[in-house]
Image (cartoon, rainbow, N blue to C red; front, side, top):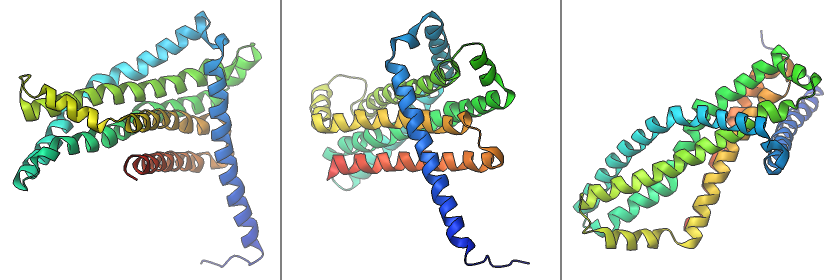
Length: 265
């Protein structure tokens, strides 16, 4: 039987929720700052550090690179065909290719690449980090004089960010090629008009917003899933992991909204 909570317990519960929310975001900001300092520190690129970074970047990027690129090519062909046929039916064929590039290259592919890397790499890496913490591996590294943040956390964060940027960049190039071939065929007759239209879409302001959005997407999916894995959250660990996923998707949505405002308003 459900019993209502006492009135005097509600402010205490609200304070606990606010404290938990603030602590979670503080951990994310703090961890991101630590990773940024380590990335800029020359001591992180010793022979052992370079080996760990290269190995993790290879393991997180190569297995998903071809699959996601093929998926992006197929998605580009389908969306381009739908938009071009629809635009022709309404007499708007001159705007079809520009619409494809704006919707597909500027908006969909960077967000899709970030979410794909988060699901395939960043979230599993965060779970691995949590398992290492629970098994005492991080404590053992610290006792032997090694830095667990530099040895275990930094390679995972850098690898997830690198994979996100790599997949987004390569898939955007593939999407542009698929869009061109879908409209103009395999010849070079439409190369001049396509290049002119591409330059019109990717103005300096739009290019800057696109680059910043891709970078911030990669930072969000690389840092936020690692926070729950790095900190001991006690009995609420599972709930905090789900909250971390919610925070990650909220940050991705916020970045996308800011980029839309920057591009179109």
